[in-house]
Length: 368
Image (tube, rainbow, N blue to C red):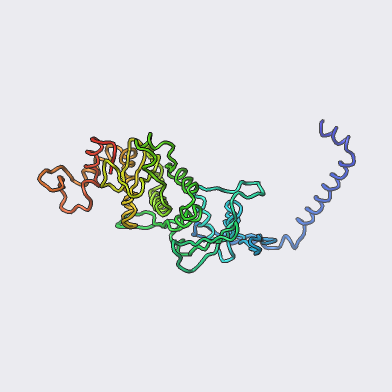
């Protein structure tokens, strides 16, 4: 009834609609009855593509072109390149193939950072031009500035094993992968760790820890004058090691803050310690000695201190007991260390197997 009234009130529009419908039907019937079209073969072709990014093809009427620094850049037409441009203001050069673009996009998506708001013409993120190099580059990435735009050169070697592959070691199957690309992109996002706001954004959103301490006295029992901000290379080491943990262990209940003691000073209670994990107050404290011995020692220290929180908040009692029994360690006053093991060959100490850790936590709230 409503439609009929509408048609009565709009006779001219009704006639145009009827004409359009008749023309459409005539053309449709004509195409269906066309013998040439009926005899034309329809072919299709399927191929298995085992690459993580898959493959894609599309007819691009006009390539996407962007002008930066008075240079016209033709953005590759694959979807990963376009997504990087729209969301992160990352403009890839023509040398980028879909596979490298896809792995770069996946890495960007895994790192908390400022992004462009969808639907807004004004970009929140400064533009960057990315070049893919066949050469080895220090830290796998080089960054220079021309005005507000960043010129980024990243090595192809950073992409090695960026996507996990299946591997088997001594009959145990697992995933083999590298975090080189992740570390390189973190350097870009944080300007090699110099941008404290950017690095704290990453630490807070991805690992649930913060560098921002509102009240040192309340948290540590000492004044803020006893502490300082981490150096950029120290922050890069911390984020790199936190990323090495399995995804279920990146955010640990109880671990909330990271603090850095003033350069040249030590913890008054344990002056020999390079780092301390306070599991009751929820922070890890780092001293100069944690970062001055070499990369291997730095990385081991970071992993070790976070492991205290895994032991305290994540592992259940049965798992702890199984791990202790695996090492076979027990207190032995006749040995120099005070500990012995029932194993003939033991590759880690009683401390690493948690026996000493359990005794320490019974006596104090701070773990070394």
